[in-house]
Length: 431
Image: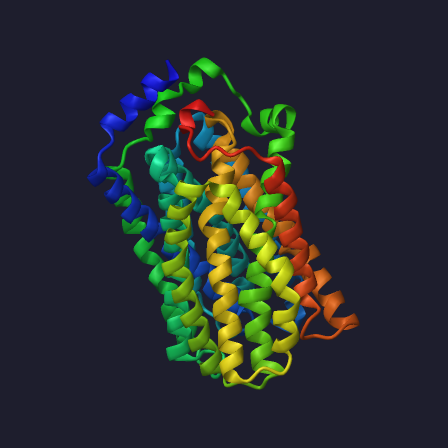
């Protein structure tokens, strides 16, 4: 019976329909990651416009919401997505991210409206993070449930390409406008952030032209009567949920170390020009953007596990030597190391989301993947992650110590991958 259902799905598969859905979803991913990256990279330049020393508590709240509202958004969006359908919550979440980003870009600063600027900034930032926490994973889930099994890895890589393309555009904007070199001119970060308004039109287009996924239509939530997906996930699929966090653990570490620490080290210790660092950052993101779909397609042939094994072992074996030479790197060596780590990272990002989506059942998939993704960022990239990196830098050589955290993430992914079964050849309806 299951094989007949699978054959029916393949016969009904429309390449043009999936292509249109993928293009729209990639656009949504690009805009969301564009806005999130801009804020993360320019936080030190943006926050002084809305906070004074007397409002340090409010500033702390603005940073804290990134690690609290993300998992909360994942729980809310996951609950609606698993009980009522993926489509409707994706539309609203994308609209929340877009509207809040736009309002942040036009918000008057502290000198104009006082502490109201601080509180409005916290509110808009909370809404932005809330929407991103549920929408980023939801868009990937939607597309992979529409894709045929034999091409699911490729479409997972395409979605990673969409997110990377958004970060690439943001990097090009930063390289051209150079807001770090002129922190007083707020238009240099306000104008790129205002592009988030485009997401409103994408969400409207998504709502009018895109239907529910075939996998969710086949699954009837009313028959299952799942009142609280998160509770069922923790009760009956606890091990799978923990393994998902393990697979995702490397993602925030890569973001912090490779795309955060390395540029910072280049600017400070190596004293490289800020524009050079931003242009190299754009270059490595270009490599990442092109490579992610390739590794996704490769995983359709060889499986997801061999790709993740290769990423983990490469980082475990070459991570420390690479960072050792990085301490006194010339601009050329700096660029080569960045490109290498970006290429390896693209293999991980091109496969990891697909791997986690494939091992959770339909009625818990959205909640399980979204919550594990946001929790991994809150844990490994949030307060704990930053504290670990700070301790390593304070108590060891700055050029090599953060790589120890990268090696820890690679080891966790290696162990988690060993414990999961390969589902690359199976239909999501069978899981």
